[in-house]
Image 1 (tube, one colour):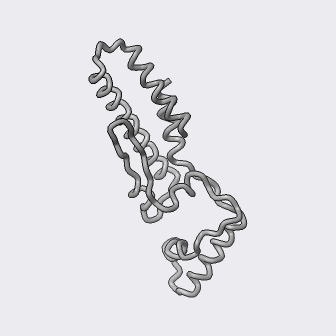
Image 2 (cartoon, rainbow, N blue to C red):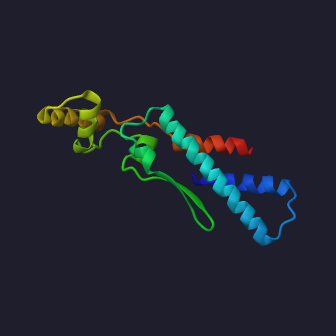
Length: 152
């Protein structure tokens, strides 16, 4: 990911240089900061759209925990849902997620109301994830790549 970010910075600088700005250092920094902020916002919007298009939505937690943070010399896109990285990168076989984290999903998606049955099914799903892992469903990486392509 850092390689992508460095390439994005390089391409923005290259584009700005090719426009022959006649700016002093302070103005250049302000223009550069604005370009980085705009780029981060575009990546964020693309990532949100990817989540919706891939139907990675149950209660909307992943969507609602996404945000862009702008600092003095950086912009950061964050998804604070506990499972955000598991969705983006998948899960290798061998680790079992807590079945308690799946109980609400079993209730909502499968319509089961009996608590004993909910716990049992959530445990079976967690055990299956431990056995087979979970395929990645990237939403942020493709958004970065899409914006990187636009900078070429």
